[in-house]
Amino acid sequence: MPSRLAPSAGITATNQYGQTSFAGNRRNPPMMMRPATPTLSPMMREVLRQSQMKKAQEAQQASSGVPMPGVLPMSKPTPPPSQPSGFMGAFSQPLTSPVGQAISQAAIAGARASDYSPTPVSLGRVLAEMGAGAMQGYTSAQDRGIKNLLAQAQLAKALRPETTTLMQNLAAAGIDPSSPEGQQIIRDSLTKAGASITIDQKGQLAFDKLSSEYAFKKLGDTDKAIANVRTIESELEVIDSLLAGGAETGRIENALIPLKQLLKEFNLLSDEEAQELGTAELLQRSISRIIPNMRVAGSGSTSDYEMRMFAMAAPMFSRTTLGNRKIARGMLQVIEFNKERRRLMDDYMADEGLGNGTLRGFDRWADEKQGKLFKTFKSGDPDAEDAYKKAYQDGDIKVGDLVFNGSDFVFVTEESVQ
Image 1: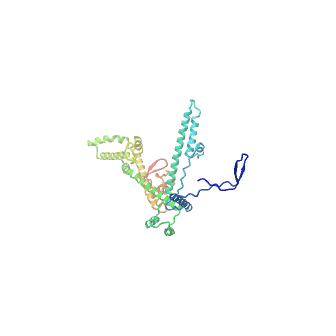
Image 2: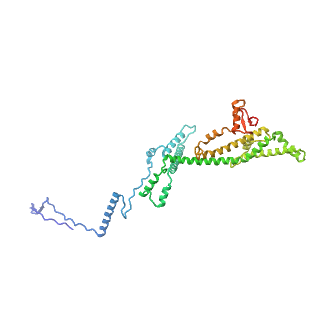
Image 3: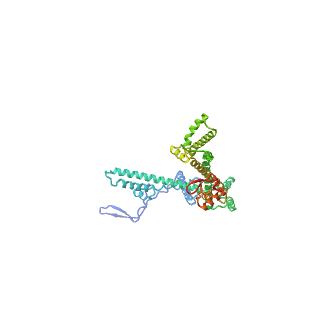
């Protein structure tokens, strides 16, 4: 609408041409009439009301931290992981980080590739070496980081205590451990005698558990080893008994066996010679069974070299009678020594003052108790002779055992211990 001019006082004047002009008061300009305040529609008023309500709810949520009904809680955005940005950002990374390792390995590879060479090296070759070095360094650092994370997770899992029986019982009864009732039950349980366990005691219990598991594993391995030599032990006893009873071995005896067998078929041997042939055949059979049974069960196929080594360590019919007897007796003493050590393991673990269910310190204790496998008594030494007789009386040695006299292995005989 056009504005209305407010009436004001004016001055009239007539110019030289007789025209009349009007000059208003410049200090009081005409006033403009302002329009009335516009009226909002009902829809706009509703939108304004909802907006004001939402702002009030958000302000109350921010001050109290409790979401209002109908309003979703405001979650803080998770900041993205820091990544090196730009060229200088990459060089600011730690040397042990994947980026730092990539840069260092690239620099080393570039230095090596650009070193003096009798043939020209292109820039592309240097860049390729640097790229390969960077990739290798980055991958290796990432692998190490993953391994470290796995190790930390395993350590945390190992150190994390398992749910105790008390907690399981509380859960079964529907009692919240954080409630006053649950807290009182936990305090009462911990104050009972023997209920509190320190960290050091927990570590000792874990160590005792591992020691016990190791002990039973060692017992099982020893039992397997002894079971593997049972066949050898029986054959060695036969060989030792036959040789001690007068059976003969050697190259001549070994060559005469086929001839004696032929004469036996024609009934050209006497009863005594036939008896000697039967003893020789039994001895030959026992010796032949030693070598195949020396292979450890489950160790796979045996090579020709191993078979030759077994043959050199076992009795052979072509060896002398005394040599075969010493070899058989020595192998038997090794088996008996190991069986006795296995029995000592049971005694040590059963004794609360010694192993108490473990084998900690067993080897030193058993070495002192068993002594050497082959006892040593130097011939010609009066003290050694007295110790030799005392060892026989105490049962440490017996007739038929091998002992070392300072220069050779000899058998313990009844005459020598009198």
